[in-house]
Length: 510
Image (tube, rainbow, N blue to C red; front, side, top):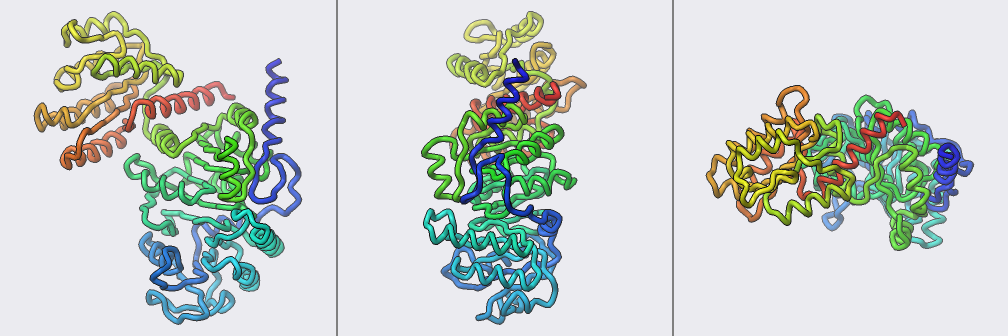
């Protein structure tokens, strides 16, 4: 019966409806030639870049000069060729009238012109032999207008006819910090092992804004918009063995080739976690996705089968995405789902246990020996040491706190310790308490072989700049030593659950 159910689930996955524009349903034969993915790899480390539509108009938020500034700031070392028939010099760079007039071949052209000029630019790319082109330009199928749909269809036809990898249109394109290829405006894109492949450029910006505080660095950040030619599956294909990426995160509104997407995610997920945030899972969301990137959304039941069959980690928000990535990157020594909760406040402890239970985490009764050791540290009145551990004195007295961590860590029922700490409270007790709290956590994290995983909710109450600075400093130290730091307990429980479920999926060899 199980085999029959699995087969049925797989058929459902392969019938998922999605894709950008008017693309066929997932799993149906795709009647267009495959993109040239070997050439696409050149766009990740281009020898030269052309900026088409480059200008220095002060009233434009996104224009060629901004792209040039961002590339320079990111440390791009190759030639940058601005292209504009009506300019001679932009930011000290010689401007060329057309793509065919460039002095050297380019591996990536970034286009920011009106959609009415898009077809002529595509024809120029073909004439110049350029194989990778990113259309920042919007005004295509995402408008829902027949004119925009027809224009995108023609753009796609020209790209495929000439063997051009079209990124977009209506997107923020390719960002590879290790190669100095960053055009995202207003954010730092630190280098690291995470690839984020997203139909939404806004989600790319938001995740990059959040990334430094969560210790997240990127191998690649790709916004691909309407996916007229290339979609998430193509980018996955080019990155799966790039030697730089250890975690794959995707935001998709539609997927063109369901069979290939399913196979690729299942293959990659066996060795590197794949996190998938599927937009448009409700009726209003599906309608919004159609107007955002022209994508048709798939139904919930079929996507649930996809997650179950591939082991991909499902997230439904930017917070979940960032927290899950952070947990996968940094949590150490968590062989099971037994959680010890160290916090203050009876009601808070009850709701904390509820949060854990909802996410499938166990909150086991601590062993008799552990409770005996904890009772040596705290009086019986007004405290509970069964788990959750409701004893605020343990969070205020750092000598007691360190001893409590040792006792809890020794309990075989415990795999992860979650500590809920208010730095403001520690500072009120003495300015050195924050430092001692950090030292106690780090001692546990660096502890003996078999030390338990530890996670921290590190809260601050007010606007004390000193406390805020300490929080940032401690968070960096904690992350560096395998201690993830969360904003709230529900977020911590959800991310830990996803981490443990993935570990269990891999352990079973599913």
